[in-house]
Length: 275
Length: 99
Image 1: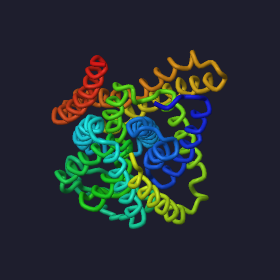
Image 2 (image 1 turned 90 degrees about the vertical axis):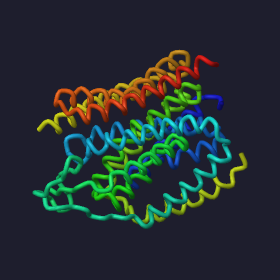
Image 3 (image 1 turned 120 degrees about the vertical axis):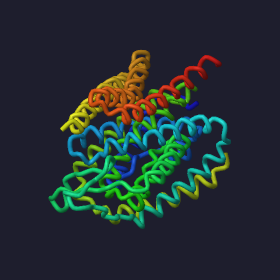
Image 4 (image 1 turned 30 degrees about the horizontal axis):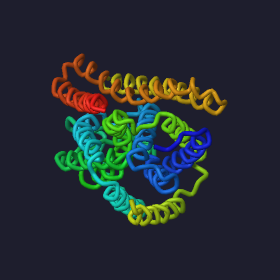
């Protein structure tokens, strides 16, 4: 366990601001940057790093979804259906994390970070929208598309595939302390008929419940250190608030390239971390 | 429309949770930086518990709303999600006792 000092809290707060800001600009939860920082720079044990990161994932999910509520971008029914799979995966992941050797978790994190770096560069965006009057089925949705200014509708396809991807995302989420949107969003968009913005909003909505199932398990074992969680959560909240304010002035394209490079380096460092 | 009422209720629950936990965590952090570390501990604990309880509360209000709508398949779906969350709480409590 790290010794908690005000200085350490301050360092984590600043890290949270950066992770939250970058995460918001790139459409990621900040966990993918926080976990390697805690693990590599501050030398926290993996469960402690993952637990603090999960609390920031919950906070991000709650505040982003609160801000989006009422816009019908979040597909509540689809979200709740897939949450059965993410929460189950997360529950299992939280328990498995206690049994797996840290070296395995570091390598798995390295693989996931590399995967995110690749998907970030080749970001899919299948439009998937139907005529607003089209029949959407029980799980489909309708929302006001900002780009075109009109209502659009979509239909959910291949639900079993979405469930499997969600289970996997939940599992990875509590094992590694990240949100898991990086697995769900591309699958929902590319194969399940959901437009990117709706997929991202629905995923962000789900990761709160997903991360909670994992975080509670870490909390029960004393691996979730509340003071460090406080510093990280408040930092991430401040960072994402700032990012929302200056979003239009940042060239996201170059930021993506830069972050893909950073993640590739993180992937190598995590993979090579000795213990 | 019923669905958007649920969306608004959920938005409200999430907002209350975020604000309440941020106030506790922020007060704790402020006290810690001022050197009053004894008082900050309980605030951190309460803040984290509110943070963890917020998604659970959101699932709970969804169940209530689906019961009101008599949408039984979704009562079952959200009920299962709540059970999974409760399972993680039970697991955490059981493990705590063993120590």
